[in-house]
Image (tube, rainbow, N blue to C red):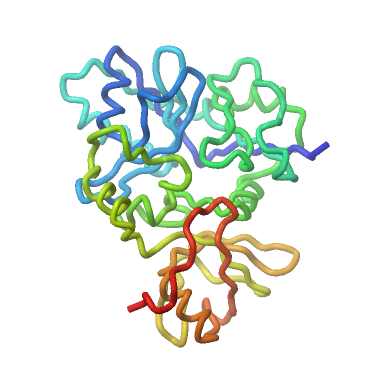
Length: 304
């Protein structure tokens, strides 16, 4: 049996989206296919700028009578304000839930455990397998203290969950990238079920669709490993002294450190072909594509 751990994610907040027009409102606004979600279902998603860059990212849970958006607490009020701006005359109710109603992550030390993490917790507003990647475990939304007392799992903290997330190769807004800086493809949202290419129009859709169909995404978040501790988020990753990307979030391991990084894949391929080591600060690093990734390193000859 795998060992289960749980962590109340106090850095996440919940926004309830309800009302007669909630489904139509979200379907025409965010990257995820809301119409394709069933009751009790979930999806990753984002709200983009008109230029197609990520303005907010979140998880979406479908409930009876509405939806919950699981978003970073640091920008939840801004997200609510932006949703209110887009609401206009639609019959949509928007509410930022109180701090004691939040999100708990539940995961196994053996990722092969996948979705088999026990039954749903009584009293939860939502309890779903993480829609980005089953190996991440479950997300449980509701009254945190009450739900945590019912879990037969080992208590952990946000740092432990982030270490698990990083080891699975899944980036998150604010922790790995700043908002309004990158496209959904850069953040691997297209790979993690957060972007629909068949649902029709939403804010920023034309740019994202064009990148997808042209295969023009040159940057991606990938995993990196190092035998030494890594510097702070945003530090340049270099090949031959030239920047090819930037560091995201990192975690220490028994063997050194693991991290996520947004890199130019063509430059990584070129460095690999030339035998040029990659550096982040004083640390030499190795690049690893996530196990779930369907993208690959391009031929070195395509690098410009």
